Length: 200
Length: 222
Image (cartoon, rainbow over all chains, first blue to last red; front, side, top):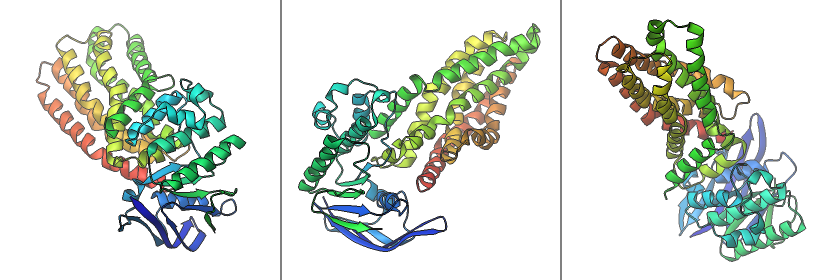
């Protein structure tokens, strides 16, 4: 069980530009953090840093697991559920094939209840190439659910979704936090979770 | 099923479905092997002599055609991040992709080669040598190709640089592979060439996943 994500004096440098500097925050189990900021301010870079793809130019990121700190980037990746701005779907695969692949890869379980939850039961056997942008996003959410990871990193979670879809995202985040999970979301819209936020 | 096998099976499925590249490689190989005898003409002795070299070059170039998709597709649609976060070290991820590429191109090319060797009037004694050399050598093509594919994954137009990086590294496989066939044709034992080919291939398959994984890490941080 992981209990907290702590960032201390993080700095991010992309090319010659310093995107942010001295960024500190702390997310505890059951909490959500909204990362706000203008386009190009480094929201995605921060998420990639937490996921361990990017190493910070300065500062440390620590995940606390059972009271012990996990600082290694690759070890941290094993706790992360990733919802990037790309959905990671193959046009050749059907919805259920795609979901099963990710479920098995993450040693989770894919069942029809998850598809029901994100409103894709009728598209179960449809190849992903026929899905709309919003439906792809819903399938990505289903993937996030079956990956069964405690720390969700979400890049623009509301993008491409209709009103019902946005409500779905908010509901899923609330349930996830209610179960002791954590959410870090880069967004321009309020998460509606009574959450804290950092601005880059 | 372990994450390794899940990824392996998924890559084989992707390669063999429409737009996957496995069929393209096989068609290319068959085309080369059909057109070269037409171009050279009906000199049966000459055809048998060049068969090993042409079929080996054809197989390497055919495998190369589908290599740029090894990581590119996953990088472009965001799957690579998700795979990197799975409970599987990137080294094993790379190995799974190498094995999948071999199963979907190298192995079918090898199976197809005795049929195409007939077009070259290759003697029945030399055909098993050709098949064995391809069986031993094509894993090296997939493995070394994976390094190139991982290095060029974030480059636009990486498809052009990839062959430039890996073709020099693959030349030993072509030399020993075609050399084994030529030795068999001349009545010598092909064991020496095949032994060197096997050693080269084994080293490539064992070491390449580390280089490919390092390149993927580098590209994900870009």
